[in-house]
Amino acid sequence: MVRLKDIAAVAGVSVMTVSKVMHDAPDISAATKVRIRALADKMGYLPDTAAQGLRSRTSRMFGLVIPAMTNPIFARVVMAIEQQAHELGYEILLAHSLNNPEREEQCIRRLLSRRVDGLFVVPVYRQAPTAPIYEELLRRALPTVILGQRAPFCGKFVSVETDDVAASMALTRHLVDLGHRRIAFFCGPQFNPWAAERFEGYRRALREARLEADDNMVFNAGSTIEEGEKAALEMLNESARPTAIIAVNDLVAIGAGTVLINQGVKIPGDISLAGFGNVLVSEHFRVPLTTVRQPKMRLGTVAVDSLMRLMRGERPASKRLPAEIVVRASTAAPKGEGK
Image (cartoon, rainbow, N blue to C red):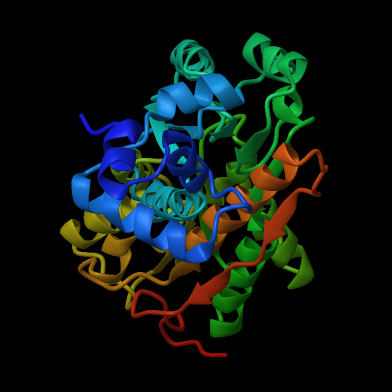
């Protein structure tokens, strides 16, 4: 292991000079800094970040808690956070809550024990208005950014989220403009604000178009491919005969679309289908999926900016970022009708 005194001996300077170079002290010339740093790199010197953290009372680490990396919606957000943090000299400690409140608390406590300088959390939504671990974060005053919509139990934190109401309204308008009047909605999990916002956007757009919201057109579908399949089978067994479906996310849409196609239903000939999220597979589904493109990289970079501002003692406003509609082959005018 290469130490500061080893570099000093080779460079012919004092250990104090090498230490000042590593801390970018202003009283060391630029030429000396370049020479010492080049020599340190050549010798394979790695700074002892643990020791530095003890001296500075910082860890240079951020904690990040998400439900699971198997959900493709999080991949680019995590990438953006990691890239931005890396440029700022921070490492990311990643934990998975698996959408379980008890596991979420364990994950956060373990990150607190590692003395992270800040925290990003995709919350596990629950009906209760408070949650002990979030109350503890407030008491500790640890800089924390919520990734996604806030609920009462995490309402006092800064958040970064997509404007899901506006995006869902735009997606519904797209189908209405094509001539659809019987539009089904496959709802997401109960108590999840993002699912509620997407349903609210759908309802608002229907009211705007003077179309009656029909409860027979609303199906509980969760958030996974399997739950989308179940919702589609339920719809086929019911009397509802929509000409279009909006799914709460792309995975639900893909599950529903797979069942419909396997049952001989043509997309979009017999029924149009739209999702939400623009995950990679949506473009490569059997019928490329019309969806909402969320600004995933932008969500990550804005979240890091918000956290850094919190660490400087500022109080940034929560951010709602706009999304855009991506029209693909899965939506078209209903049979025998047009705009």
